[in-house]
Every structure is written in C-alpha cells, then in structure tokens.
Length: 370
Image 1 (cartoon, helix red, strand yellow):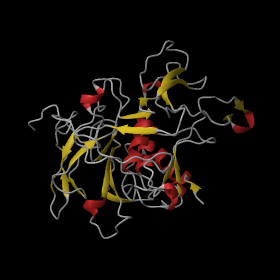
Image 2 (cartoon, rainbow, N blue to C red):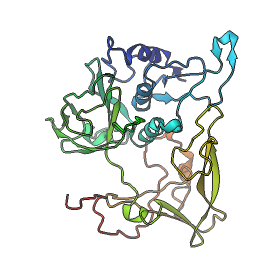
Image 3 (cartoon, rainbow, N blue to C red):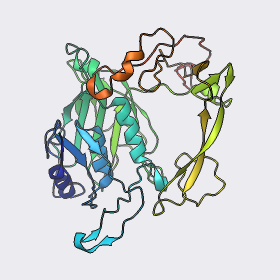
C-alpha cells in the first residue's frame, strides 16, 4: 500500500521558483516527503489543481526513486461543484500526451521507461538553486561497481533568472559519452535539442562535470529547467529511414502487413490542434489526428524485422510481455512475470536471428572520420 505524498507536493509548491527557498537535500531519495517505498508523488490531483512550477515537479517525479503520477481529467472539464470550492474533479490542463506543442511529459515518460530504475544516489545537493542525483541499478548483480550500475544523471535548476552550472563528480566513469535527452516546449528552441557530454576525470574512477562546459546555452542547466543524461540509445538507421523504411516491419506470409487508420482524439476542452507527432491531418482543428497502425489478420506465419543504426551491438524483441516468438518454447512462461515481481530487465525478450550489417554508416555519425 502506498500513500499520496501531499507533504512532498506542498513542499515543492513552497520551494520551486521561490528565490528565498532552496533545494538543499532533494538529491536524496524520499527527502521532503514520504519514503520512496511508500510515496505516490504527484503535482496535481482531483482535489488540488495548483502546482508551482509544474514542469519541474514532473521532472522530479519521473526521475526520483519511488512512484510518480500524472493527474489528468482527459481534458473533459467538470463543472463547478459549490460544496467543493471549485470544479470537481479539478481541471488538470496538463499536456500529458504532448498537447499544445508541449512534449515534456511524453519525453519524461520515455526517459523514465528507458533509464529510471534501481536506487537514487545523490550527486549534488547542497545548493538553494541546483540539485543533481543519479539512478544506479545493481539488482541483478549487487557486487558490481556504481560505475557499472549507473543508468541516469538528472540535473535540475530552480533559478528562473539564470542558467546554472556546478562542479561535481558522478558515478559514470571518466570518458563516458553521455547524451542529454530532455526536451523543452520553449517557442524559441532554447534547450530543445539533445547534445553529447564527455565526462572528465574526477578521480577514484568517477567522472566529473564542470560548470563551464560549453553546450547550446553555455551553461549546464538552463534557467528553470533540467537536463537528463544517460548513455545514447541506438536510433533508426539513417540509411534505411531516408528510403522510407521503419525501425520495425511486420510481415505476414512473406509480405509487409497492411495498415488501418486509427483516430487519436483529445477531450473537448483540450488542444484543437492535437497532433503531437505532426502527422498529415486533413482537419487541423478537430481535436484529433489519424495514425496508420499495422493490421495483422493471420497470426500463423509472421515475421518481425528490426533495423537500427551502426551503433547497435544487438537487438532483442518482446511481444506482449513475452509471447514465444521463435518457437523454442523457452519463453512462454515469461509473460506471467510482470515487472513488479522481477528485477530482470530483459525478462521476456528473445534473441532474433542476425541478418546483415550494412556500411558505411559508422555509429550513425555525419562525420565518419570522428
């Protein structure tokens, strides 16, 4: 059983964006609220819709140790209930699916799915405006080093006047080439684009970050923003996608399957231009867009083909939690092991047959001499 962490929410409502208050200590798990094993962290709820600096609260809740929650009413706004002192349930007005051109929550959700696991370890926490922490996952092998278990580095700047940079060491080893995954909804771009960061030598096998590392903004973290660092995941192959190919192709009886159009619709009080993926849309103001979804009509002769860029060492596939794909019968039981009962990250995945590596795409780099 978990408890809704109203204490943490109230503390952030008082601290975030407040120049007279600080984030000291918030690099530690459970700080400012209930323990990570007990808490359900949230910026809004059906009872409380006010959230100071909601964008930073969501960044914390998606990356801290514990369970985060994004409240939404689906953009179906309830009417005022006099006894409640306002609308009930409260209006969320949250871009939970990337509405209004604000892709921060989908971006955080993807980063959470790919890298946020294991326990939280403080990296920098003694500062009113700046906090940094890591996620370390050593559940499969408790004897590995923190450097081997490091999965993510999160940096948050609560100074809404200036970008902030600090000097500190991290569990990622020296020389690590990390990628910055955070995306902003700023109209002028700002810190929208990702970039690479090579860690210096912080001593004792730990990498270092300095506050004057040059990037798109000249500071480590933009004002009122956050950075999300981890290893760079492989991308779809540029050579293949430029020719109209997809990362995953489904074939049925030797032919690519057809597609069916599916409408994705926002609520009537949401975004009339709802189309976060910028797909072709015949009516750009009807609160919906259409997407082509593969349509399988016969499951007896299927093939899944996956393609990635040259930085990929291997590809594993999983369907519906672990359905036996390759006919060996060794994976059928794995679909009965949901994530909450196992620490094995790769549970249910299968090794497909390697077909071919094409050149000359060197680590998906524009400059292949690098």
